[in-house]
Length: 135
Image (cartoon, rainbow, N blue to C red; front, side, top):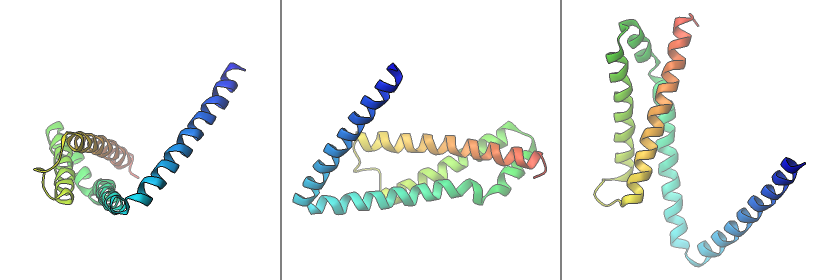
């Protein structure tokens, strides 16, 4: 019963937060339409970067199979480092340069690169497992 009450109250609180935040966003962007354009540009760049990150290890599955054939941790590490470097280069290209970004942008960029590295690792593990099973 306590769990159900907690879920009910928590759900109502989250809904209230979303309603208030949504109303605040609508009011803010109604008064400042130039900020809305900036937000959409940022969202467009983030989605483009995420598309590149998501597609890279799948599009280059043959590199993972080549690394498996070498049976070397150094080759696998170099492959994952290469994927991370490519992800960083794409992010840097979309940002334009790294000179004008602040500390929050650096933190978000670092978190994005680390997340992309973990994603690359998991996808390469999946591809390697499928290759070893003959699928």
